[in-house]
Length: 286
Image (cartoon, rainbow, N blue to C red; front, side, top):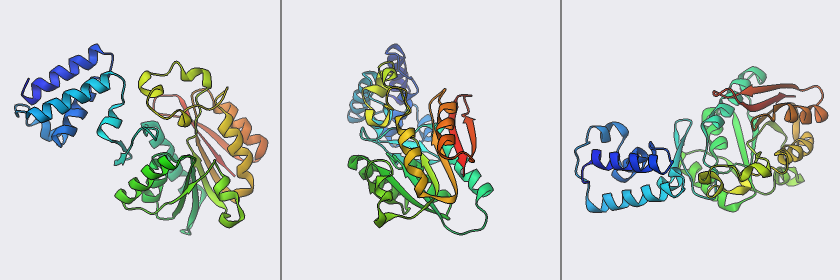
């Protein structure tokens, strides 16, 4: 096994037998060769060095054991950009790109003019949502909050690498912006909080439950704990006209809608499905 095509064939078969995604073989080999997909496919008869081959085989074994490929290569693509990730942050998902897209579209509908808009991302993790919003719309003045300093370090690294300015705040949910020192009212509040019911954590894939941070996954007995707290605490922080955007789990749309209605009875609320037809987003216009 010395050529690129031989290494790929071996890894794909090995991962398939281990019940893992065989496409990870290509991602891992591209990472070790530092090549684009097109370049690697044009060099299938390239001879791998012993060091490249050993490092590749080691990572294939580690992925087969359950370590996410994104943690092995150190990044994930999100909205066309590369974000550093490690085991302190949730790996950004394609569904969350749809949440970002929904915010960008609704900004044009709800907020005319070109004045700055105060945006807060609660539970920022890798910073994927906050950084993408800041880069996609120059009107946004983005603050991002996380309870874990380790997550904020990754988010700050991503912001620096991608060349954008986000204010990073350490604390529990909205607490860092509810104190008088930091009280700037919010135009857009976005959160992809932990929303998996505690009992469902055990039936998640081992790749997720054994490696991604549980604090970013578990949402209490019914998965709604963080929505309850956010919705209760957000009201005094919102401007007269505001947009709320939540990512949700399948089947949680009506529950989250009702929680918002109890607090903001006149809000216009939408439950939106993702590209796979699963309930994934709730938007509320105040």
